[in-house]
Length: 78
Image (cartoon, rainbow, N blue to C red; front, side):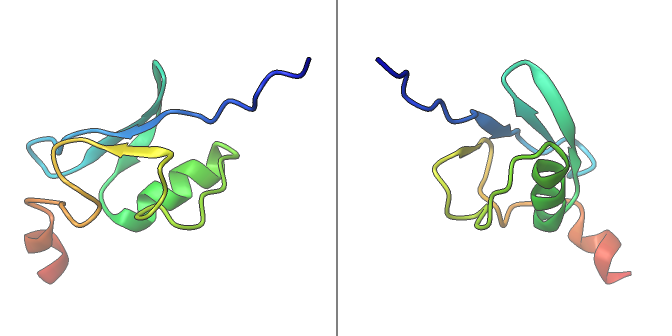
């Protein structure tokens, strides 16, 4: 009997003091994101092609959703 396909458990962690967010799969850190586009790129580089990072059930957003990047908006506006 074939085993069901396991989907990766991706976590975008709560923002750090600088607003960046760590992206992990299990115990492995895939990268540090400073913007929603970084999450897409980190997953692409890990061969995890997720076309809608904001709407997928594969990603667990901790400490805020895909629009929460506190502390970084000041840097982007400058």
